Image (cartoon, rainbow, N blue to C red; front, side):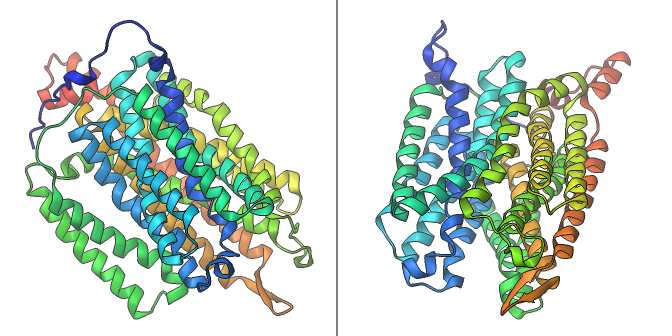
Length: 497
């Protein structure tokens, strides 16, 4: 399929000399990424108390998490494509505004239906990171791009590590609505910062938006992720879950067929099926699975009662503080990731990050009884996640034309999201299967936690293998030129990317 040439937006042309706004572009975009991750995690400390606070059932309350997951998975590739077509800053501002509106709705209401709707609106913020990375590619010179993209990728882990203790402190010492008023104020600050400090990217891809493709992808993803996220509650062999999986297969197959026959598809599947792009997406899915198990298992392990023989009985605030070193590590190691990618290539950085994640889980298997070892193992996993997550967008940026960076990165983030959803379901299944009674309460055994670590380590090694199979771009380009063959226009666009 021929690729339309990028077009420029005159309104977004640079105005010449350095400005304060230019220097604030990276911090403002990073703030938006951290805020997105904080917004996704702040509801976690509330989950045990929400049935009492809202008068709803525990099953209904779980939808405050599921709605955000589903909306984020659906909207990330859709908003990424919209950003490529209509302007990345414009769509980024809209995503942050929807997130802020959702936070205000949560602050104003205790009705569970309103809260679920608001949390679905907040799912739009999942597109913040891929849109921001695309803006950085368009606006920054090559020598600054690597470190900025690495920092942007790390904001997901940084925000998640900050969000849990922050929310726990607010919930413990203030009314729970206060937390959402605070995030509303931060969201408004993020919207204003993007509008003021970030210029509209001049790179666009003209054409009509693929509405049918967006609806088909949304339907398929909702069926898939709803079945994965609710399988443990509804029963994996139940009619509802099996029906959802069957519907997902049928709908996504039809969507794939439609995308291949559409002149301007929502997702360029011919580009996705290229090894450099497709294997990067596979590695993203596996890395998302391996990373997410760390947060899930660590939080449950340290909060387990001491009577289990392994639990530490920590409070929610203390649990959040245990995960905080991992967030700080992600901030500190993102520049290192950029240097390794510049020297050795992003696929080596990705493989190294996945291997470090596996090493972190080996530490968790070796000792999960002492707090300092738990924190050390979790921090090593976070370090590996920093290297891997920072390398993934760089791989995508080098493999796709400039006019498709937001949509391609959106698909990559979608694959991470699917990996996290599958990780959550798999870890839950392992812990439920390996549990014992403590009084009248069923709790996971230490053996169950160790199996979950081993599973995550195996997936991390699979991600390492996938990363090493990603073809290099520079060698191929050099071989073509050494042979005296001029690259085709399409190949030239990919090399320049």
